Length: 292
Length: 136
Image (cartoon, rainbow over all chains, first blue to last red; front, top):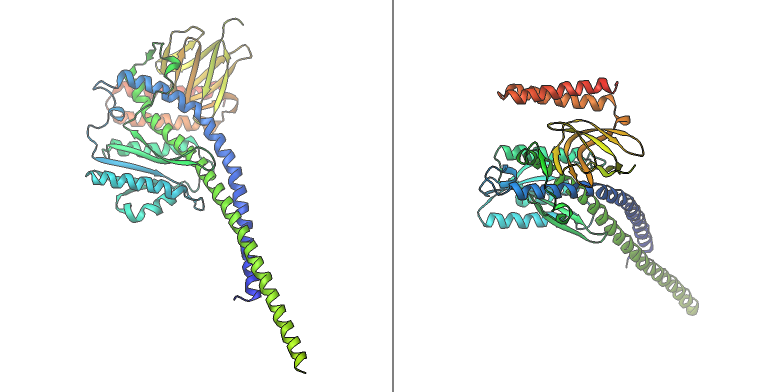
């Protein structure tokens, strides 16, 4: 049985752990609110953008003159997986869930005889995939210095991906991120960005109108497709940001509760041992007195 | 004012304006144009430049770079990659734009397509004129 001093020390250390997890939970809650706000602020742009792109893609998409970003390169042998995770840990299963999804996809593709390349955004995904897919890494984007994710960050990543596409380094690009549903639910998601596919979820909005295009449908499409890549990445980054904070918040909430339970258990143990010691001493004194 | 249309200006990071406007002047890729209520449905890409909004509540101006505008019967949405109210534009914003225009001009010069070079040169001149216009 551990002695009293050891128990006391353990209780103290669990208490300070609880303080830390509690603080982290509150910080995550504050950051989550901000992350959610920016995710919401970006939604109108993404929605309208996709609605217009869906219309354009539907009218131009079928022809041979359609840009490569929409049509694809004609083959799909080389896949680029863009794995977006957090820069920091201690957020429950957030990072490992994304990494797991990416790993599954990579195995599936390799099973079909395709080549897989991996671009990681965020340190944690890189660490998680290093063992299995380390040989497929083609690059890494470090966002640890970025305090607040801006569109410029997404543009940089998009530029990197597009220059690789122009260099014919891959045929299909998929991004992996976590979709934010609520604080306890984040869904790891894979979304194909090249060749682009647009879901026409706002179809009812202006399906009746026939638009004039200036300069021309093809020119607009060619101009907008690279921006579509950046837009998709930007929304993914923001969703990821909100998911990360949400996951961290609930993980830290759990940790705080566990620490509380542990303190209760240790305190009971401490009190019992203390009583045992007192009883022991009493028995010694009484039996000593009786012996006289 | 009897005749207005819904005008929205959104950038990826936030929605900048959503109001009733009487006329909006856009820096279209093929030239400036003004959209008024009941304009024919049009989608046009934008070049960097000034976007002027006339509304019953008062006129406003924004510096927009890249993006596109979607005009339909009852409204106008402008999706710009970057949009800044003119009052908040600083010299450094403009310097960035000029640097970008200059870079694309240089890049175009190395190619042989004369029309692209001309376009880039015009954009560069536009950007410099813009600075004078806003007296920065």
